[in-house]
Length: 390
Image 1 (tube, rainbow, N blue to C red):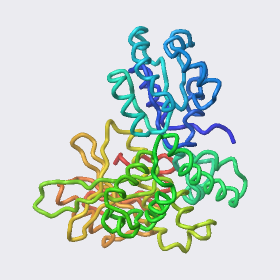
Image 2 (image 1 turned 90 degrees about the vertical axis):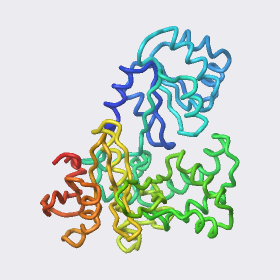
Image 3 (image 1 turned 90 degrees about the horizontal axis):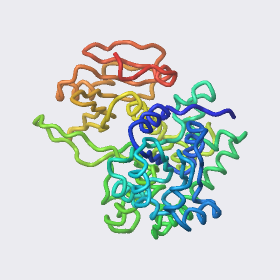
């Protein structure tokens, strides 16, 4: 399959013009090294997972940084913590932009080391698996929805091979990736927690209930969730708070970020299983939430993301806050939307004094429902329509 352009490219170019170094984080196998090498074809490349490269760098880190041809891409940077303080001195000495690109999983130690050693010198970007928009024209968004966006899946010719690959991916993450990150959590227990989250996908997270189901403490559950979130496997979407004289919920909503992993953990093995799965609507919601967040980071400056829900049950799936502006999104899997379907959106817009709201649905045409609410076809958003413009 030919190279698929990534929407993060523009942000990488801006980061290289502004900072001495750029770190690209993301889940394993999301395409970080392929992306970086494609965007920087003249850069030298060092893979710290390769024994020969690791031995060469670790033998004398300062000498390596002095002698290596810049710019340089350093893959699996989290494997060598001593690199970061040495890199700070090398960057300060050279006084140039865009010298180093670091790739690695977003483990807490990696981000802490980078932030501590390279403050003011480093831009941190997140590369997600392929979005529906990135794959438009290559495969259908329905295929992306079923199997997720991890790039190696798109080199496999059959559904059975894709399911087998997802099985190995989950096992490898639990048995290998956690160990590389220095985490000692039992893989079996974390696998149970991850599996239980398929039933909570798109819903508010109750730590006490999850702890009871797993037979562990609430503190242990929080630890499991932290691990999965730092590894980009789940998203905890925070609630939006406002002084509006109404009781708003405080618990976050939880999503398994990649739809292919969600479906594999939920026991789906073929596209036909998705058609009859009771969690189909919540799965679609998660797919769209991830797409909108990715698009927001691409099109807006420093956006923030929330959901909104009152204790009475009125809810909006996603709020995108951009400076002082807030745009509310409701997500519907249905092919038709009526006024009853947007009651929660109307309550939210009234309470927060919002002028615009958007319903993303599987409709054929864009139309207005009045009162500032627009229904946008999901197909057109995948094809490039901006969900943030009127």
